[in-house]
Length: 227
Image 1 (cartoon, rainbow, N blue to C red):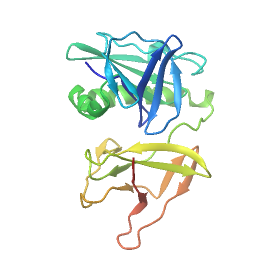
Image 2: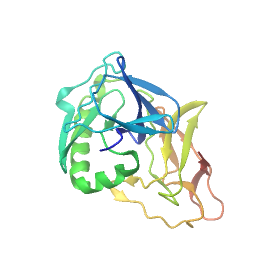
Image 3: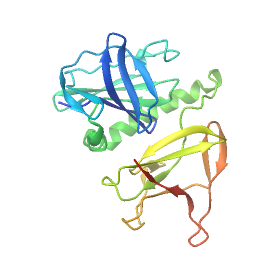
Image 4: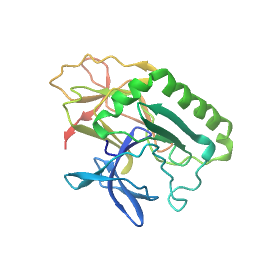
């Protein structure tokens, strides 16, 4: 049993409701919503304003063509996890992964699937994307950045990165990777800061600078705001 949650290019979405029009997926922690195609599921209860549904044995999420320009079936990747089929999708327009799991357990499940499996599948699609890059226009959907936020998982925080009033990405507490290597956490656990490992964060198609810490030379963004 699980609440259906999705990771889309470092953004987490969760299922808010299921109606005849489809599933209402809300970005965490924002209120931005996307309607996706209906998925049957047994309602288990509610938590806050969201409904919790049991995952089907084979969870397959099809994005409506009205929401996403085109959905490529050949970019669907199925990885068995326990007795539930975890289905990964690479959505061209979003340039990210979508999968079904419980919101609070998504990092654990990715780890149990094994990091190599996940990265290999992701790299395969990224290589495919590079070949088709000349055919696609750049779409501002997410920020490519390497960083970590300390004091997790207890620190329920998020960072919003903006450029010229454009929302480039919302990131939850967690460890993010740079060149497939784990970024070590050495900041005090009492802090909840986002530490950027590059001088430039690439967001919305253009690079922009973040403040440099004069004390230690690290490139940092503002502290997390508690939700």
